[in-house]
Image (tube, rainbow, N blue to C red; front, side, top):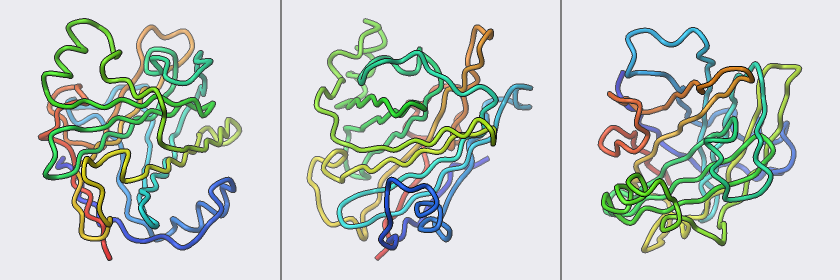
Length: 220
């Protein structure tokens, strides 16, 4: 498996709160699948997920469809450690010429977590101290919508991420190149550990392996 390259195109106007309209807007958008490339064979409990991208104005839109047999989270407020509390979808983004990168998390009940790591040392500090305090973005600067569909065995999410939430020097998106990774924690009640997966060709189950992320190019 190699990490994906996505040519991110401009989307037509759509209603971000209406799933049918969202799906229609993304019907020709480039996408990728989440897998477990660090394993020779995926775990028996692995559930597929697919993600599509597009842009409008100064905003990146990310649509995800996550197959899920047990959709839940114990999260009750924004900026909790969502990956420890239940199902969550994670978006990692870093402009090509930038050291700092951002992480955006969305739970099925639409609670969010936003983090920003200025460099590798910042990540190492967070891991050594088991604290996200220094990376936490208290004033969440992205929007999201979620649509749990337990009767269909999946949930959908749409994230709206302004360029200013990612780039140190915001500029017009067309022509820009970012590195990205889409990841998830899939929990099942009664299981002690979640099943994790990623769009990136990770050689270890570590979502922060930047060199193994995919490439996102914003098309005119």
